[in-house]
Image (tube, rainbow, N blue to C red):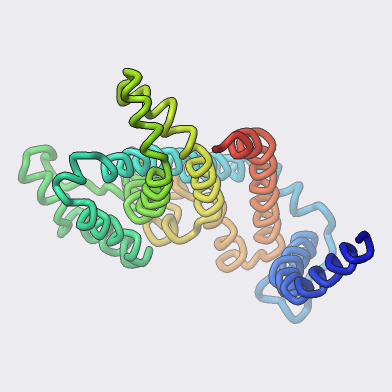
Length: 304
C-alpha cells in the first residue's frame, strides 16, 4: 500500500512538472533578474555596457529618501486602503440591494446586473478618457451641470486642485472596478441557505440580526478574499494614476507604480526602478503573510 501511494505521488508530480516549470519560468526568473538589476547601477541609455554591481546602495538611497516614504504613504493609504474600503462597503451594499425582495418583486435584477457590468466592461483607458472629458473645466458636462445647478460659481479643475484630485481619482477607480466586488458578493449572497434566514426570522430576529447571525458568517470568506485581491491589484496599479493625473499636480498623486516607471523610463535609472519594484513585492508578500496568518486562516477555517 505504501509503495503504491508513493508511486501515485511520483506520477502526480511528474504530471505537474511541466506546468511548474512554466510557472517558474514566468515568475522566478523575472523576480531573480529584477533582484539582480536592483543591485546594479544599470542605466537605460547604456544597456549594452551593462551595470556595475553596487550592492545595497540603491536600497539605501531609496529607503533613505523622505519623498519615497511620502509616495509609499499615498500608495498604501489613498490608492489602496481608501479605495479598497470604498469598493468593499459599496459593493456589499449594492449586492444586498440587488438581492433584496423589493428588487425581485419589481423584476429589476437582470437589468440592474447588466447595467452594473457596463463600467466593468469599459477598458480603463476609455473610462479615464471619458471621465477626464466630463470633468474638463471648460467643456466638461459635470462642471457645466454643477454651475447650472448653482453648486459652483465657476468651473472647477478637479484634477488640478490638491483638495479634490484624490477624491476625483478614487471616483474614477471605484466606478470602473466596483462591479468586480459587487458581483462576487452577489454570488456569495446567493449561496446563503434561505432556510436558515427563514428560521431566524421565525425566532424573531430582525434584518440586522439575520445579517449578523446568518448572512455574514457565510459571506465573510468571500469578502476577505475579494478585499485581499483588491489590495494586490490596487497597490501595484499604474494605469489609473498615470492616465488620470500623471502623478500630478506636481507629485501630489505620485504612487509607487508611477515612481517605478518614472525612475526607469524617464530618468533611465533601471537599478533604482527595480529597487522600488522589489520593495513593492516585499510589501505585498508581508501583507499576504499577515492576511493568511490572522484573517485568512481564522475566517476561512471557520467558514461553513
